Image (cartoon, rainbow, N blue to C red):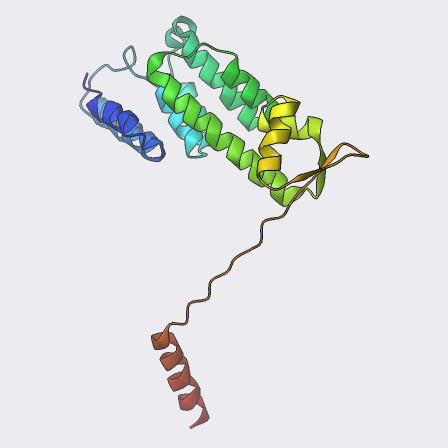
Length: 197
């Protein structure tokens, strides 16, 4: 079976396109009547769905995986543990599931990219949800030890309150650009002129 499109997408680190590439290839080989289940890169396919926040597609893919594959490929089961943690919104558990398996060479880059993306998303979640948060909770959300989490958020401009040992969140200024489009202004002027006359 030819997985060159999957390999090319992995090599180019276009992880946001990987789920579509895998889905389309799976549909193509299934339509051609090719037996693909034994060779299919299920771990990569599941992770690709996580990367684009498509947990439901990952769940349906998991249900379609033959039980013999689930039993014989521990990496697929390890990826499924990540999905379970994502589904339950067990933020710290996602990081534990990622660190709790020795990933193969084929999957390491995708797992690392997903982990980095997930950490950034958790940071944005903390940024939008909290004004102060404990160091322990921050470390849990970011999947780091307390020292690393503190250093990470200090680099982002947060501060530590020495009395309470709480992190004070520095809100990012909201930048809104309003571009004045002359054609829109012209149409609005014509519309108002039309209404008045």
